Length: 498
Ligand SMILES: [Zn+2]
Image (cartoon, rainbow, N blue to C red; front, side):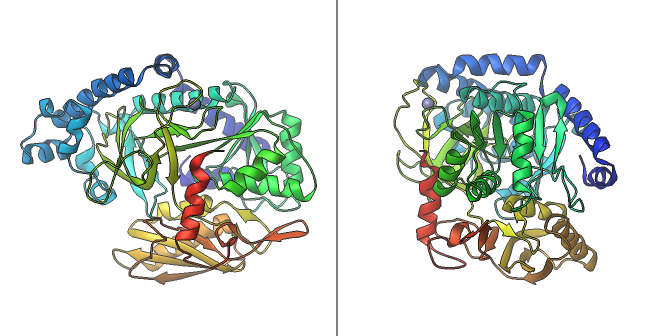
């Protein structure tokens, strides 16, 4: 749903919103499933048991297709390769990839139109954007094939946890499904075609949390798919009331999963957490299997390189910059794309028997939970998404020291117009509510934390769970804003699996 659609949606009564959600679900279901999805799923079913040699052979076969396609139909790559004196025949093996330069986020921003395949026709592509590692918006296009493949990966991840399509699942991520103006229950909507109970990530308080849990119980959900912070908030509120909601599994994605989050979630939902990691750029997909020894890298989806600062591959066990090549988006190929996160390969075999390599620590952004004056705890990604609609923002960061006020630090190409500033304030108010004052501060740069770790959301406001109060996520170990390597390690360590 586009923004205007969301506005209209928010004015409808609840039964109509449920109906609209299911209509949307039907449309999405017909877009994401079908013969191509079945074909992708069959491949993934088989290939999860491939040997490493077979997996690499598959990658090289796809790489040759992508590189030839890019050279023949994508102006950016045609120019780039010609300039380097390269032809498709020069990039056929995994080891040939390093002949091509790394594609940065700035490259994509600058050359978006040149990166789209002439063979695709923009109408057949879906325009989308990433919420952005650096808090800016990045537009991109997906073709249908990558949509099917991504969906097939998602359902393979779920099958590893024993979940099938049609099983009742609660979700707590993505779009605000319940308008903020709504003060009473139900804080969820039903997407019938997917059998999803869609929980609002924006309405979680001490008082509403028991209602969320009751709704999940009533709907008989067997799994929860949520931002780690959202699942953590629900689990903490259950802890405060000494409650449990046994599920088969909890899936987490899109934010780093901290050890403390995993512990509390697993205890209260009486099941294991299956963490996954992927990006909007559709170049990489990873998830845990039921052995929880790290993230299996889905080699069928993309080629992942981990590089040091000079661009050389790092050995197993060493943290490197993630650079990845998507193998399925022919509408807008990303070849050697610098994702902006760091990770390491563990170099060990998984007892599950799959040869899909295990990634050790994926160090993503480090972000806190936002707190509102009316006691709502809001996942950071929900607010980071507010920036996607305002162009011209190079970097952004939200800083909160008081529930009633946030400061939005912006690095911009040129200062926003009054209209754009108002837009930004409104987007934030749509998520945090009108009682939160929004200051906008223009800065020249936003410092990184530790090694290239970027923080989009910093909150020093403590979290209150019933009668218990804890520090916000990244303040737990002392220190305040801009904390250094210690927390970097902590966030990184949390990604090593249980
Ligand atoms: Zn495994």
